[in-house]
Image 1: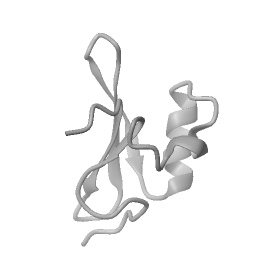
Image 2: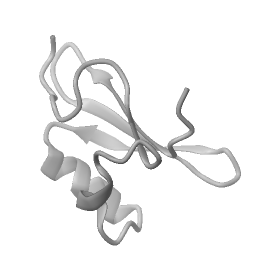
Image 3: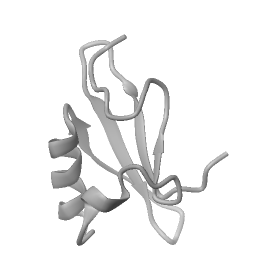
Image 4: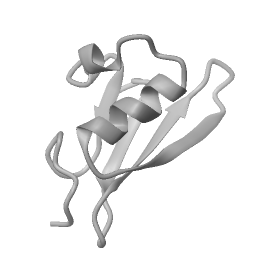
Length: 75
């Protein structure tokens, strides 16, 4: 199991993936429903990450749950 602080959840039935981030105090914040890598990057920049494009495929930072990474449409 990954301890990555950013979780991209499985695609919803209508498309899009919930994005959450876990803080140091173990609280979880909902960042939004991403429909593309671009939207995901915008959410992560809004959360304070300086170069989110560089970490999307880094399992130490991002955990892609259910479905393939970078796919946002319902299965």
